[in-house]
Length: 442
Image (cartoon, rainbow, N blue to C red; front, side, top):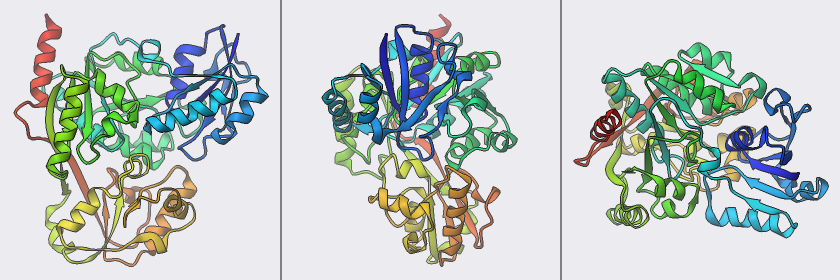
């Protein structure tokens, strides 16, 4: 029996355990390690989810203790199970593991993808913040307009009590409160609810899929970070980011997605340099010559266009989508674009940051004069609220997909920024879906 540690961040790691290790008597998973997401370490993967081979559950430790844990538990194999990290980063982790004498392993699609009984479209990306979720929502809407019952399944964000998050269904805002969703979870779920699409998430993705199949004609997988799909797709659409040329070949497992894709969307072409768009195109063609290419841009605007004349030239705070800036490595987001277009005076929030928000700037030094909407706990949400209220400005531009005013008391007027996928090439998603459905029906 091989002794195993799974390196993760409360997503891919739990899925890999569930589908490959949970009932596998050839292995004994002695621990998970956790990184990227605050508050995951020093918990347990509960016995309810771990199965009969693990009657006491499985402890979760900080990744910083990895070498110590390998020696303590006499580990044979370490399985790397998280995403949106550079190839160099992965090999540094591999070197740390190999130096202890243990083996280093990546589980692939054949070992971890679950087969759906219903047609399934997977939307993945090469980096966080490339425009994957707006693409997923557009596909859902196109299918819904064609009369199909569509259900979306979102990559996990298992930040709360894991035993209570086996299968989560969101079809109204009540579910967001019932499951005590973090800001990051709300950013992903609310926009689907707003367009009338049921979205599932949770921890056990076999059970989630079977629940979704009961009410769907077609399932859309909305991936997280740049991870590859938990389900075997009938159609794989991958979003690349023209503002980050070369990343499509240098990040794990984004390059895997690129090479598997049926369709690649090269996004943000109007906000990128022409040479950068061409670099991405060449990399797509060299890596996956059979993939169809769609060119697109993010159409950025505000929910109420009449407010633009009110914010023009005013002092504004730009609050942006958290993961796009932190995991995704971008310095600014959609709110910043609107502020610049309207000649606003952008107030840097750094001297107003409170508690853990200050630590975010210390960790992610690439951040521009914007505030990432961090909220992994009630405490951090309150610190974000205090930071926003402390900033001396006339307006807050909300570049996060959710309405923070639903659970925050803010002391200044807010303007919600919206962004949607705008295809600009002759080939459109609607053409791809139409051809795919015709082929499936034969």
